[in-house]
Structure formats: structure tokens, C-alpha cells
Image 1 (spheres, helix red, strand yellow):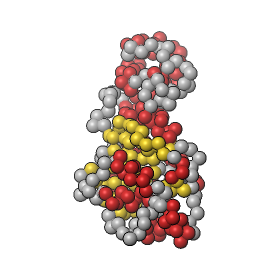
Image 2 (cartoon, rainbow, N blue to C red):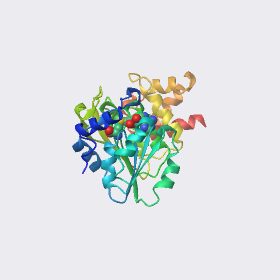
Image 3 (cartoon, rainbow, N blue to C red):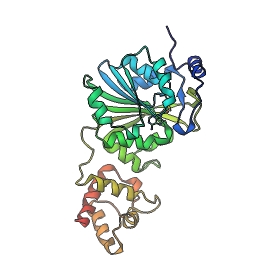
Image 4 (cartoon, rainbow, N blue to C red):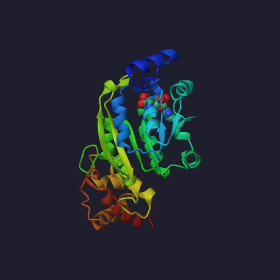
Length: 292
Ligand code: SAM
């Protein structure tokens, strides 16, 4: 019986066998702690009927643990040098398929249709490459994929921003972008010592469970997100000043913006970081009237 891939000894053996050198530019920090992997997989509530999409399998440390519990795992890996290694390390798991592609360019919707017909639910589970954490999460959420949720390792600082509540210094447009689609919770803080090589930043695992409906119904989603981004433009400015300077309303419309804020029951002197998603929703519908 082979040892798990994610032990320091077996990982070293695999890396040596293939003369593999890490590419920092691809965010290659491999997990070498089986315990941590078990806990990540536990947080994803995977059953024998679950399909899993993994992003960046590396040498297969997490893929292996997912394959043991899920019905099927499809893993997207950008680094061609890892393909022969994965073919070797994952050979005991016939329920794994590796796709050599940049996840940001992949047609995930079609892959889901083709590969997960027989699965009852679908999760994304990954130890993400940290240089592209946010674009990957936004792609997965904005493409409205039929996912139950996402459980991923990322920079702790990004996890803090994603899960932050109004009033918290980490709360910003990323918190709202993600919480609009999901219920977000940081489920683990992970020490640097479980990676090879060790990353420069602290890490955390976040669980995002897709909401059946957004927490607030807005008339124009794209405009809602514009209002949110504008409101956080300069964090020390009031919401009024941020809206007038970042939403191209112009000075002459200032009075109307004040009126829209008051109709939404938001004090124009408040800062964006104090507004809830619901308040942003009401506000964006009021501001939309100025555009109509
Ligand atoms: N899952 C492995 C583990 O936990 O040990 C490796 C995780 S490592 C943090 C990130 C992986 O993502 C690397 O294998 C890297 O080559 C891959 N990767 C980086 N950018 C990617 C992209 N845009 N699309 C797919 N994979 C990517």
C-alpha cells in the first residue's frame, strides 16, 4: 500500500523522482499534511454521490483525499510539467480526470454538463494559487454554475475580507461581491508549516455555500455592484462624497444624491464600510432612478 501523497517523505520522493522545481509565479505551495487535508474535505460535506471540481491539483495531495470520498473529481491544472506526475500519483483513482487548462479560460459550464451528469451535488474544493484567488472565485460565482458550494484554502487576509461584516475594517466590495452569492465562513486557520515550500503569508480555509436567492433583490445587478465599488472608492470619505466623485453624477446632482440617500434612510455622512448589503440594495435602486 502506498503512503498518502501529502506526507513530507512521499512528496519529496515524488518531487525528486521527476526533478520537479516549484514555480513561484504559479502559486505552487503544496500541502504536506494529511490531517489538514482530511479536515478540508470534512468541511466540504462530500458523499459518494458528490462531484468535485479542483483547481490546481499540484502533485495530487488534495485530489487523492477527494477521490477517496467523492463520486468523481475533475481537476484543472495549468502547469504541463505536472501532468505526467499526476498520471502516476493518481493512477489508483479511476474517478479522477485531470484537465490541462487555465481555470480562468476554461468553459466550466460545459465540463460540468459533460462530466457530472451522474452526481447529485457539486462542490469546488481547492488549495488555490494565491496570485489569482479573487478572479477565480468571481468567475465561479458570476458564471452561475450549479454548485452547492466552494471550500478553498487562500490567504488569511483575503478570507478576512470575504467573510467580514459591516463595520469591520476588512469589510469592502469583495465581502459584498462574495456574500451576494454565498454564505461565507472562515472554517480553519492554517499554519505555514503544512506547505512545501512555505508561503510568505498566513492561510485560511473558507467555506462558501451558495444562496438560493441573493440577500437583497435589486433592479439592476451591474449597477448595484457599481454603487458598492464607488462607495468604497476612498475609505475615509463619506458615502456621499464617494458616490458623487466615483459614479459620475456631477456636482449639480449632489442634492439628488442626498435625497436618494435620505429616501434609503442612510445618513449621507456615513462611510461605505458601515452599510449592510440590504442598505446598498435599497440605495442602488434609489440611485438608479437618477439614471432613468
Ligand atoms: N492542490 C495542490 C496541493 O494542495 O498540494 C497544489 C496547490 S498549489 C497552492 C496551486 C496549484 O494551482 C499549482 O499546482 C499550480 O500549478 C496551479 N495553478 C496555478 N494557476 C492556475 C490556473 N490559472 N489554473 C489552473 N491551475 C493553476
